[in-house]
Structure formats: structure tokens, C-alpha cells
Image (cartoon, rainbow, N blue to C red; front, side, top):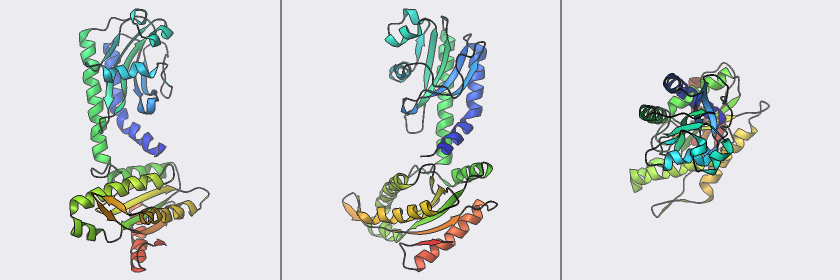
Length: 310
């Protein structure tokens, strides 16, 4: 949903990836060690170290067919080891003519593949058993780093960002002097759902609402759950106008009220009260949240299912 979110994610991974790549480059005598993000078959190089020739650089797309990476996941050992492309039967290796390749998968918290840590050269190389074990162990370390990051920065129930991520992201957009508006969204009468149907139904409803929110926000927005039924939206503002933010606020209630949300056979209708403020330069996140919170309570006093702008 957000390029800035991706950028932050890579920044958090950067230190661990740097250590892993440095250790591998000092141990395995090939030209290039790199970490590639394979999300959506992108093969984007996130981090790279070249010993001599600059074969691959950060930000490049790795020149390998995606099938070569997927073998790391499909292989029972979790490794792809190709000492010499000429002696390997896959068509993709024939295109590369000569060289060597070894990779191990790196996973995200949801069990999906984040990417691969790879060793590559344009000449053959006989990878040792120790080098194979090392790259596999370090790929597990990178996976755990990503999983820990995910747990620290995301709400465990809905998968949305949490308050901690909101703080880090806000500091990032302040440094880049980007303009955002802030929406404080509180679901109306959510306590009734928990009291009437139980917390399990309430939790499932929150998950569905969270999924709905992520589909209706503009690109580069952040949606965070900060409490039981309270959410913060950070929405980019262009030309110092808040029209798109206001439209998003109306879309929230429109999406909630169009059709009841079905949870375990119960058709639940719910609305939201929304307070909005503009992230003017110099204001802290705490001040903005207080302003939007005050506006949101005015919306509740005005009959709920309303938007009030601070």
C-alpha cells in the first residue's frame, strides 16, 4: 500500500543484511553476494556486495529467471546450489552461459517468501558443505529479523500497522517534508457487538473492517489500529488540499453502510465517527492525534457516522 512503508521496512532490515552479506563475502570466494526481494516475482536487489567486478548493484533487477529463485523454496533442503551453469540442466542457466549460483530463501511472518540471499559469480565455484550450511543458517537469521520486525510494527489481530509503526513513519514523512492529513476513526456502538455476540465475533468483525479499510485508502496511505475499535489513517495530501482525505472519510462510512458485514452467519451493520486534522509543519504526532480525537468526539455528539474537521 505504501512505498514509504517498504522503504522503512528495508531500512530496518539493513543492518542485519549488511552483517550477513559481509560475513558471506568474507567466507565464500565468489564475486557477488546479494539479497533479492522476490515479492511479486520482482527479483529486486535490496543489498549487494561485489568483491571485484560490479556484477549486480542495489536497486537493480537480478538477471535470473524467477524459476531459479523458486527452487530454493521448492527444494527440500531449502537451497539451490549450482557450482557450474554449464553442467546444470535448467534452460535458464543456459542463457547465463557460465558461472555459479547458490541461494537460500528468506521468509516473512506470514510464511510467504520475502526474498533470497544469494552467492553469484561469472565463473564456476565449488561450494563447500560449510558454505552451504552457513548461507542457510544466515537466511534463517534474516527471516527471524523480518518476523520480529513484523511483530513489533503490526497489530497482531488485524495485520494493520500499530502505534509504534505510526510514530516511525510519521518521523520519516516529517524528514522528507511530505504533507499528510490524519483521520481518527472510531467505530460506533462496537461495544454492543462484543456484548451481544461475544468478543470472538467482535475480533472477526475487526479483521474484516481492517481489510475493507486497506482497500479504500489512497496509495501511500497508512492505516493503523491503535486500540480496540480505534484507527488512525495517514493520507498523503497534494497541493495543500484535503479533498481526497475528506472523500476517504466519506468512503469509510459508505463502505461500512452499503452492505451489512457477515460474520459467522450474523449480518452486522456498523458505522464510524471520524475526526480529521491536517499535518501542518511543526506539529507533533501527539498533537495531531489529540486534535483529530477531539474532532472525532464532536462527530459522535453530532449523531455519529459523521466527519468533523479540526
